[in-house]
Amino acid sequence: ALFPLRDNAVLLAALAAATIVPFLSRTSEYYRAPIPTDYARPVPTRWKRVPLLPFLGRVFTRPNLLLELLLIRVGYSAYQQVRLAATGGTNAGGRTTAEHHGDQILSIERFLHIDIEHWVNHAVFKAEWLRDFFDFYYESFHFVVPLTVLAVLYARRPGDYRWARSALGFATLI
Image (cartoon, rainbow, N blue to C red):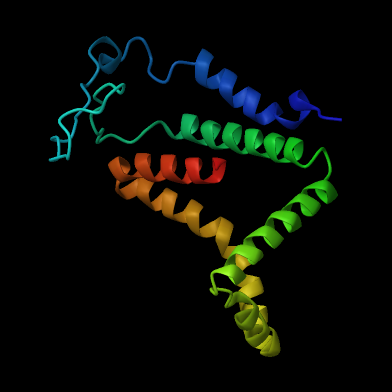
């Protein structure tokens, strides 16, 4: 059974704090006269406008950290729910589907004569130190590196952070 309130108690408390408690005191001079947002100068583009999309300036300022962390938590929670629903509520059901899709991809690779993965896997499997390295790399870095890159971009290049966060989110969604 899913316990959305229990599982997300910290998230809900942070969201309540973010929406109820103002980030600026009403007596602050910035509350009365906020600093306008600085936008980057437009870069040359292929088209003068993109149909159906409003013109959005590239923002220089960094987004609110608390709301970004909430966005990550909500996004990851939604990802977990979709992943669980896609597997029929079990990990075993998802493995069967994944293996079926893997067999389809392998058949296409063999048809196109680009199936080198089998040879590479056997070469790596024979070298135990190399296999251990790649296992450690996958288990450790495939999750840590993107978050570290996002943290560095958030701190040092807030304009680039926004598109990197969106790209990573959409890639995860797909």
